[in-house]
Image (cartoon, rainbow, N blue to C red; front, side, top):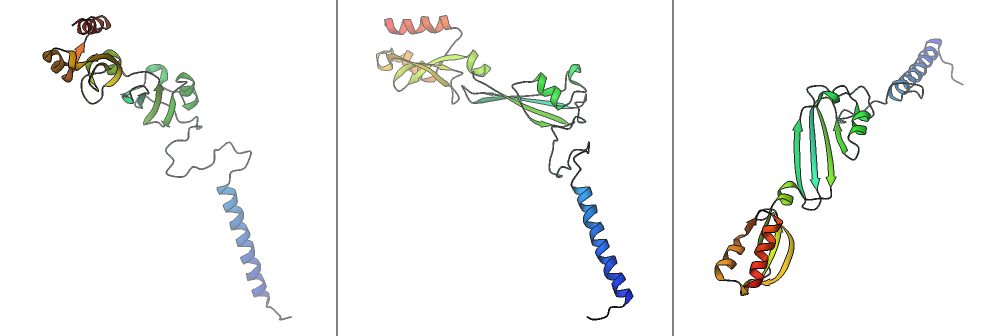
Length: 191
């Protein structure tokens, strides 16, 4: 065995001790203990710690609500400031109030939530028009144009209509009520 000087042994022992202390320190600071009240450190790119009860809504928080209408594939987005009864609430409290909503982002500057509803948006639900589909008189939800949704196709071919009526229907004729719609269709059938 080669003899080592005392200073070499001391340096080797100190190096091993430093490595052990460094590993222990890294372990202690990176991995929180099971008894720690602190949540684990989040990566910098994480916008929201949903379980962090310290994040609360303030009077300056923007509340963004997005409603997705499944029957017409339209969306409405509303951006408001919180009502007084929401100020000071955390994620869990907001989740209880807005059950059914999906909270996509929750932090002090902005809360973003969405709700999917199985209905038509206001434009499609409140507006109807009579038009043409595949050569037949048809009823649509919405306003004449590209976003109209077909409600039903009648058995009235446009070839049986007066040319003026057929031309008007090709552009779409808005009706104000269900009664007006039924009267117009009955009138077309009787001609």
